[in-house]
Amino acid sequence: MHRVTITLDDDLMEKLDAIIAARGYQNRSEAIRDLARIGIQQTAAETTSGHCVGAMVYTYDHSKRDLPRKLTQSFHHHHDLSRATMHVHLDHDQCLEVTILDGNATELQHFADHIFAERGVRYGRLVTIPAEPPAEGHEHHHEHDASS
Image (cartoon, rainbow, N blue to C red; front, side, top):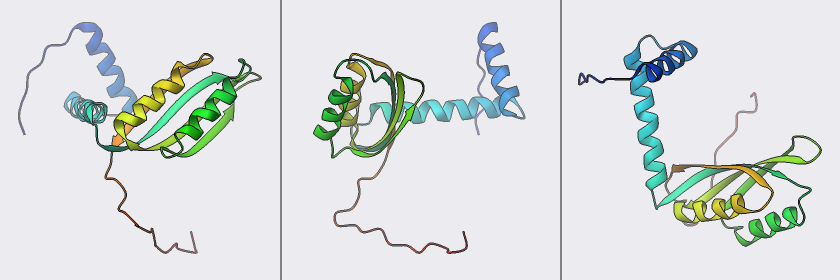
């Protein structure tokens, strides 16, 4: 393990100490190591052009003219990327959707950008994780414990 000395301004140190307290870290080194790992993973996910899985999260106003129809058309047009979607009604007009995506990182980002750019979509975020592409003809067989 290497010892590193860093300088942080007071505001950043206060925020770091708040994270340490909230998450129960034993010391600053543990917190900084975890934050560094998260940053490295996030950078790798953002810069990958290979296969990945992801979660696209967005809120939208379903009462906006033609928006639900446009979203449905986009999903049908990109059916090969979408695995599952959960839809939640937040209030009378606002909906939240979380969609699990699987495919090339560039294609996932392009699809998400298209969804987020639709008029009436208020918030959008795509989180991707590099993953191995599924094997051709792979079938998933495993047993489930009946007692669980």
